[in-house]
Image 1: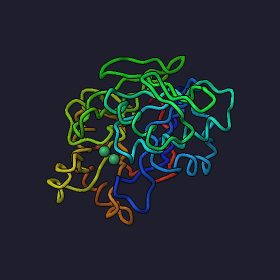
Image 2: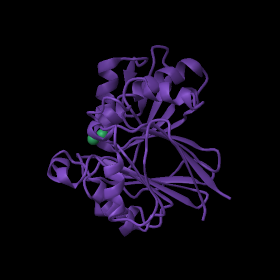
Image 3: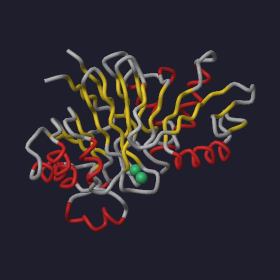
Image 4: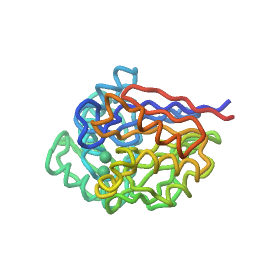
Length: 274
Ligand SMILES: [Zn+2]
Ligand SMILES: [Zn+2]
């Protein structure tokens, strides 16, 4: 029976203190491993090592947008990977046009294992290409493995932000990215086995959430229902819900009848065909 395992390496929002910033690993049925967002700092390496997922095992990264809590860890991922796998092909990074501009700026600013960077990728001081940019547009299907494909869809957050639908072995897992309530996500998440949706706060703070380009738990629940998703996992939590996230679950359940849970760092979830 086809299955996909999701390992949460970071589940906190940008202002999070007790959780790592957003990153997930998808282990697909055909052996394809995807890193979805890269957190900040060394969280991908640190939390991945707790789960037996070494940085060297990544060949493909999907990015949602250019905020540092989702993208700045990329520099450490490519650095550790290149050190541990001297003969590795470039790390394939899938991103839209605007995050690419910021990725190039980030490379130029940090220079971590990167000597030159251009529109194709990043090279280290030996002239070895350590990253390859793959610019994608919403709706474009990309092939990532024998039975694994992905496509992004626009998120309502900042310019260039997207969410991702990943399909493998007949299973679909959809990640909202950072977004306000998003009809385009609902369309993209139709019939998904799992919807991973950000839930910054509850409806009490809905104006604040909207102002910052984020969703509430109610938005996530509504979206899961409208998409017909089989399961909902909430992530990207604000610090005020780290100690007690039950209000997020309760609120999502008011709008969605399926199983709802809140991700925490190091949580692993397996989805399989019904
Ligand atoms: Zn974020
Ligand atoms: Zn963001």
